[in-house]
Amino acid sequence: MPDTAENQAKEQPRRRQARGERRIAQLLEAAATVFCSTGYTAASTNAIAREAGVSPGTLYQFFPNKEAIAIELGDRLMHEMRDTYGEALAPIDPSTTLEAAVGAAVDRFISFNCDHPVFFALMHGPDIPGRIAEEHDALHVTLLARIEELLSSLLPDASPADLSRTAHMCLGLYKAGLELVLGHEGAEQEAYIQELKNVLVRYLEPLTGGRAGREEASSRRTP
Amino acid sequence: MPDTAENQAKEQPRRRQARGERRIAQLLEAAATVFCSTGYTAASTNAIAREAGVSPGTLYQFFPNKEAIAIELGDRLMHEMRDTYGEALAPIDPSTTLEAAVGAAVDRFISFNCDHPVFFALMHGPDIPGRIAEEHDALHVTLLARIEELLSSLLPDASPADLSRTAHMCLGLYKAGLELVLGHEGAEQEAYIQELKNVLVRYLEPLTGGRAGREEASSRRTP
DNA sequence: CCAGAATGCGAGCGGACGCTCGCGTTTGTC
DNA sequence: GACAAACGCGAGCGTCCGCTCGCATTCTGG
Image (cartoon, rainbow over the protein chains, first blue to last red):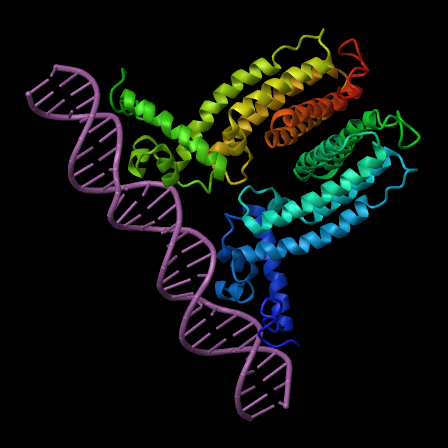
């Protein structure tokens, strides 16, 4: 069964011109701006269209409804996020310090969230509709699994329940730190990043029993 | 100038019957339920009235608008909160352990938030209108000042900027832990409370330089 | 017991917002 | 150049929701 017009109704039911792709990118960028400043529910499709400099009708030429805009935006962010956290959490190099590992992971995640503030806005609102929440949960679960995997190499004698709880704590602590980091700029922002790293390192350090890294007493005070 | 009908227009412009006070309490309770399950913006006044078993008109007999409901609810929570955190953060007893001080404060705050889940719902939504955000900010600032005061006795040689940053971190960490605590029940919830305490103690311990409490190496592992 | 105030009701107003529809314009294809 | 399809527009439809209004019922002071 080759690609007839009927059976691919869900994939690309419509042939896009280059202009259309540009409009889509433009609309997604505008949506990101509006979502960032007002949140998902409070953002009106008319406002998004206005921000993009097009009419409401044009917006609905490319998106079936408001939710689809957030879905598509979320999808694209997810892909970038997967790349980023792939880089951020992949190396389980046992020769590195806990401090260095945490520092690298935090730096990558923070830079991603600073580059895409809409990610935080979309994932933080309690008002997001079903589909986005599902995707968020999916990413959340994947992230937790990855963190658990990393932690298991640091804490081989922890029970699965403890491991899961510790992973949840790490992610929650990161989110809390992220909020503070995004709320400041320049030197103060850098200071909060360092504090976040301190929190994570000091939280995890006593759990390792001196297994990871050579220097144990190196993260005492912020220089 | 005694209380004529004109000059007290903003205080009690209307004499309430006992029935009215009951209705108000009933409506606030219903509002708390609805706010908890759907958030502020998504909550409709008709839904609140329905939850309370009264008509929309009756609701507007006692509240001028939707915002006023949240304001009043917020005000009552604020008062209870002030009492609670007054108890929770008041004793700066220098003879107690850092661990004990953190543990006591966390326990009191957690129990307050568990008793009034709507507090978390109202304070966490990014959709809250002006007045509530103001009150939230006011409480936030007061809390931070209180935490800073406590920290200054623990870290006498820290700069004001460091003190403020540390206080912000502590509050952020607490919020993160609270979210996890509220998301679990029973033994798992208790475990998260303990983890939250561990995070705070381990974060603050290295900063004290061994000033508070007798035992320094007592909070290593969760029993 | 009665006048007036407080309480209670629910249909419905006004406006905002998601989304549609008809029609004109641009672009790709032969 | 001609035809179809994709693009673009903006007035406006349907709906939902905060809130009002007129009227009935219950309470309270004198």
